[in-house]
Length: 292
Length: 265
Image (cartoon, rainbow over all chains, first blue to last red):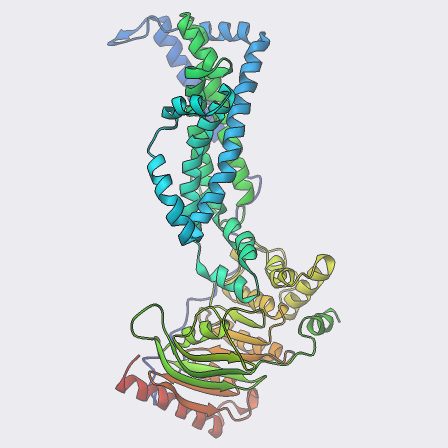
């Protein structure tokens, strides 16, 4: 109103931008990328395999020596043998149980702690210094502590996986909660909503997109740590089996272990990603053609 | 049918709140208060429009009435009781983006109902009734991002009314809309306010909007309420442009203009 004067012909403020038509900016469910893009993705994997085969079969030595690395064919033959062995599946199951329990615990505790630290100055002051001091310690460096603390190896490995996933989830939850616009909370409070209503109807759903960023990162570091922990102190699991193969100089088996880890990691990451997209379907679509 | 049910069920026979602001100073944190020594009395059921230059504390005043901002000095009271926190009796309507983005239009309108523990089919029916009342029948399943700015404000209006507040505090609710949509929303607001006994405090920059909606118009200045103008024959479209209304408009603009020259907020 600073421009309005007594003689001003119009008392209205400058017109707002024209009313946009109801757009369809929200992602359509089930829309996949173009088939051609799938072809490129598969081609990328096949190309890498072919390169590997050529490098190893031709015994290329260009400072990096490929003459002793097993060929993909040798690895595939080894996989054929291993795939008939029930121990292989037990190992996978063992590693999955460890990572999923550690990750699930980290998700629950990390989200709760992230919300608490973001919403309460008292909890922030109590917890934040502890988190900041523990956070730089690589989870795998906690193996000695885990061995001392836990009666069984199993719990120690889950603990290490938990610690690895906890911090990315905590940090991204804290940021997401702090970045929430206050208008949503104000609206719910003036409808008579209390603390728990604000938490369940505004804070948690509003922070979910950011939380899922942390869950994705957390799942990645969980794999790194569960495999490392198994290599150091396990007596089962994909990481232990891979390390064991190395100690008996069975390189094809080492590579079978590595590929297994890669595929399992990809699968769990995709599961987190898929779940994330499902629960944040309300988000406006990213720029058309953006990476998915 | 559904609508009358919904109206009586949520608003009952409750009356509007009397809002009283008594020598209030308001501000955010230490330092100069935004509002100083402001007094206002809004009788039950009145539509009071507050105009004033940016920075005069119009929104701050609404936040205090909503109970979201504690007063630095003085008292704010609703029906004689000092306001100390938010209450479902005093709803706040925001300029934009106050709808929860992950909830559909219907689920947004259901929110105040579920806070009041209305459940199941009843809640759904009432929410749909209110959406129909603001002209959004058939749009229940749209997300806020799929609605235009005007439609989002309609949903917000429906959500506010569904809670059955006894006072509605509106903070430039049509400020982000284009002129045509704004005029339509003003007519809709005047129309729905007829069916509720709630007291309304409406903040705007637009003097014509103030004259169209309000019973009284308060011009806010640095020293509190500068001028209070009674609107002749409130909410009667036939009076638009008549000499009495033009005179009221002149008084308001003069108060705003005087403000600009002497001490801008």
